[in-house]
Amino acid sequence: MPPIDCEDQELLDGFLAETTELLEKLDDDLIALEKSSDDTDLMNRIFRSIHTIKGASSFLGFDLLVKVAHKTEDVLNRLRKGELVVNPDIMDVILEATDLVKLLVSDIKAGDIQERETEGTINKLLPYLLDTAGARQTAATTSPATPSPASDESPAVTETLGTTADSEPAPTAAAAPVPAPKPATDAAPKKSPAPPKPVDGKGDDLSDNTTVRVDVKRLDDLMNQVGELVLERNRMIQINQDLQQSDVNRADFNEEFGKLTKRMSFVTSELQMQVLKMRMIPVEKVFKKFPRIVRSMSRDLGKEVELQIIGEETELDRSVVDEIGDPLIHLIRNAMDHGLETPDERLAAGKPRGGTLVLAAVHEGNQIIISIKDDGNGIDPERVGRKAIEKGLITEDQFAAMGQREVFDLLFLPGFSTKDKATDLSGRGVGMDVVKTNIKKLNGLIEIKSTKGVGSEFILRLPLTLAIIQSLLVEVEGEIYSVPLSSVLETIRVDQRQFHLVGGQEVLKLRDIVLPLIRLQKVFNVQQRGEVDDFCYVVVVGAAEKRMGLVVTRLVGQQEVAIKSLGNYLANIPGIAGSTILGDGRVALIIDPVAMSEVCE
Image (cartoon, rainbow, N blue to C red; front, top):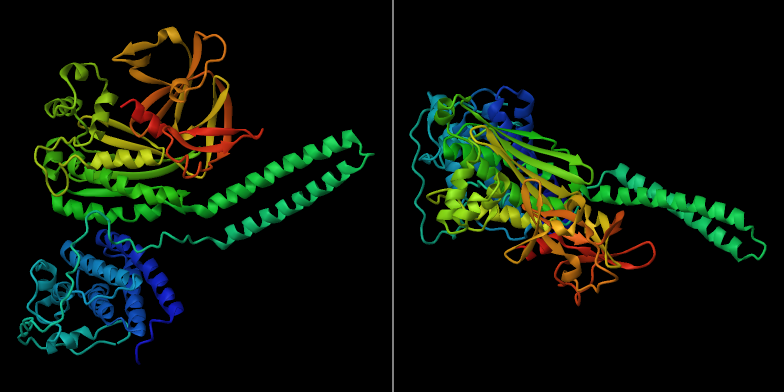
């Protein structure tokens, strides 16, 4: 059958959508299969995924993709028939082939189909397809890092490769010598190299970030709420017409208007919730990369690590999902390289041979809490402090005055690392700095808990959405400002005589920390009204690992606000993230905790 013309955009879009969905689940399934090789349903699901990709690719004429998928399918077919046994070596090769399939699909998606080099990967699959005496043992023990001399043109291999789901069994091939592959000539077309084995989860995400798949039920709920809103609009028009009549009963009008206000408030809140839900996607979109990353790093580092994922169905706004991938990758790499010990080290410390890494997500109010917890050797505050002194980041006196939390915060300084020698995985002091930068960008918070010899936990607190936020309204000498509630840790009323001046910076001793203070009156140049009161309010806020206190005149209350842009002309005002409109029509500026934290640096 001749290949279908790929200009048929509808066919191509359908192929890409289906293939992307299959590939997104494939990594997780393959990692799970390595641990549960006797799971027949899982094995069959993996086989069907590759078989479907191969069939659709063949129908559309993507020959290079068909070639790789076909060989991968044949190996999977032998696994499901029990002719091969799942082991780490064979899984390495299957995962490499899957990466190549992803790369070829991404080429198709980008409209840039290249003649990529596939023989290296295919040659690693071929030993597992040799159906000769002792082939099963060879396939189970031969390291795939050394390519087999077999080539795709071998008659003996070709005969065996015909075994697929839709072919009964091919005749057994004789144990004949296999010719070596023909050397490449200068006339051969130049091919792009195959991708290296990914360990950071980048470059294999085929999902389209410009679209969101929405459950039809959510669309139905949204339509129902719009219908309710139309009814309330009609009622409002009717009340307005009644008001124009001179003989309107004021008591009846007030009662009806009060009822309308309550109904409008309820319907608007429901409508807002439905729209937000349409933007929500499971955090699984990010979490699905990590089993593969943990597996690759475990093998590279010679560690035995079990990854446990909790709450992957937890939903948050797509704008937040798009930003948390990098921080989580760096935190997992940090836990794998710095936190968890080798099997021998764990046994010597009286721990189980294999370590545990727990990645969890949960909703808490208007925030999502994501934690990365390991049962490794924990963080040694003394070692962290000494490294910071050695690098000239702090002085001996500063270290002596620091609490444990402040010492842990040193990990986020640019260029800081406890590694003595940089490796491919860590030691350059950029990982935790990236985490801090990304969490700041999201107006989130990060906290470290660690016990030496027991383990560590990194906790991220992120807003569910960046469009509509819960805020704390505060007054500064008559001016109203909005502080994102996701950044507010607590509020306190204090006597200003408790403030101290340290190095030109006002601070407040709050329990076990020294809290830097920022007077919003000075930052925004608000004129003093009346006499200065001894008592004021301090709003304790955080941005990533930083904590500070905003000094305000009084607290107005909590309110949900929609963030409005200030436009290009006013976009870069320091300390301001945007604006909102209050119920009385006044404009209130929204405080940017990230920019405020930089004032303290």
